[in-house]
Amino acid sequence: MIKQISIFLENKSGRLVKVSKVLEEAKINIRGLSIADTSDFGILRLIVNQPEKALSTLKEYGIMATVTEVIAVEVPDKPGGLAGILACLNDAGINIEYLYSFIDKPAHNAIIMIRVEKIADALKTLKNNNIPIVSGKKIYSY
Image (cartoon, rainbow, N blue to C red; front, side, top):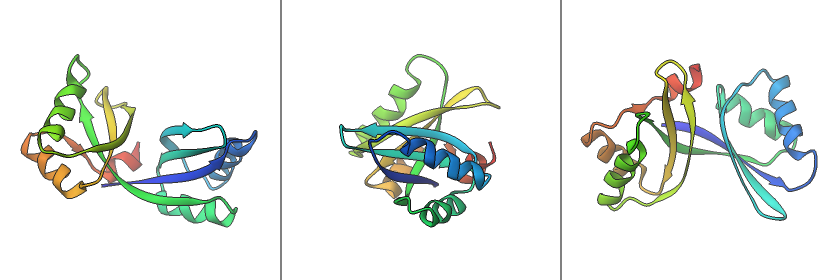
């Protein structure tokens, strides 16, 4: 399981740079990110190398942040690589809330971060279908 940092940001100039500066000063490396926004607010989702330290540091600076568990799977870099994974979760009745990706440098494959409602069921389905699940230890070490 991967610990993702979710940050609720007001959609104003300078909010995103403040988060990145706070993490920089704490020597926390951002490994992957996603931003979903509206006209007033946004949610910044981060995968960092030290999630617990990132959470405490952000809170020290008054930045609203929470930890959410997500699943990381390795996706073959070929047409249909993602479709196969999504189909097996769909066939098991598992709804995906959101997903985003980053590149796995050593293997040259994509890593997809997946947030689902039924994490245990999703992990079982992925394992039963021989889909490589990437550990937190590996993700944090990139």
